[in-house]
Image 1: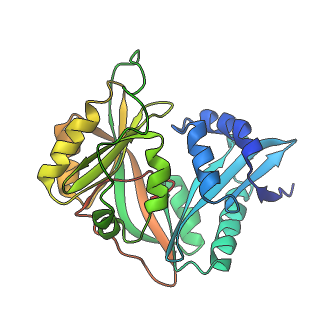
Image 2 (image 1 turned 120 degrees about the vertical axis):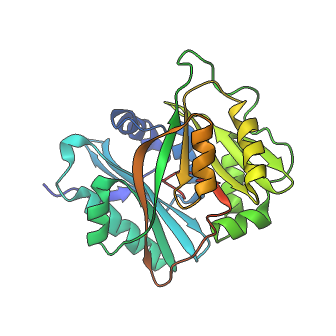
Length: 273
């Protein structure tokens, strides 16, 4: 059976959420809305009888860098070439926009597929988890609360490109902690609270920020830590987190856009970098 790829729209979100829950992912409706708001022409799906059975999204940061994420295929439709078709659609879309570098974060199962499509390894990382109180309430206080402005100059150096518009969208559904030489966020998820992104000029600043962020929740918490940043790995372990998932950052395109991982203590999420 040939499955047609089409654009994902806001009307598809309830169906996409069912797929998300069936796959055991942490995303909420607001995560899908954020992706569609940021790039409504760059999100794609496959449907059967109007029910979404596969999704993928793209997130562009200008013309230098873009991300492919939310690669989901219902288990009954796997190994039918749907994932390859969706990734190929994303690559065509991003190349038509002349994006220099395209990245994604791959699970071990997805890595072989992405390698066959021309993606190369950049570096490995882990999702870390700290168990919390399953009966606890969502994050304390109002979402969107901040104590100052996100450290854009530091974030630009850490991430490699300007992502201030994406940070602004994330901040609307996150608690943000800003110190003199660092910024970090924590937001709600279906299974757990999620730390990230977080950038810091020094390990001391990162330690202060993680303390403030973790004070916001008593729920189980996820934290995607760049493996090359050993200060971040140590900080996660010292705060009771354990690695539970292996991922690999991969890239393709005309030129690898570098980042400074010594300043990155938490990723935005595997779907957007």
